[in-house]
Length: 193
Image (cartoon, rainbow, N blue to C red):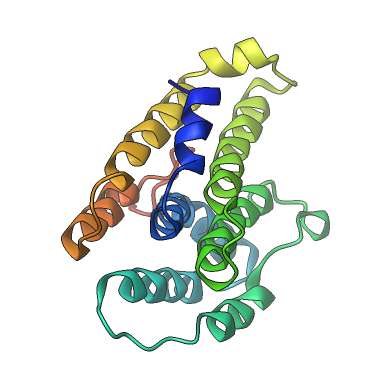
């Protein structure tokens, strides 16, 4: 199902579904950002957590008043530039920020490509990590056969199915819980000791 058929289904998502899809991927990548922030003394894991929660609340609580543009602008100072760090973790952290930005932008300016942007950011995190572990560039075939990449594609297909349900706060909150994956990120990082 992954490939053209998958992306055609993403393109048919309603704006709120694009937002939830992108936000769920950012939620799943949160541990990547948090670990980078904690180890590099750059960024703010608590602030990312708060920014994620703000958008989840916006999507699930009727009448919630949030200035999403201000929220996103306030977070921008915490987005890492990987060229300024020797730590590989800057890349997965940046990808988490890209997915979060896509979720916010899908509400603020609604270009319609935000879910695909978040999908690509999450896939890019996994591909980069797989190549880091292999200590070399991997062919497309090798990437598609990689265990982490297969898990990522399965996750995104399942996420797309869940996002395709009717809009209800309970459904969106269930997607948030699904995306959190028990605190384990798309590259296997867990914040639990």
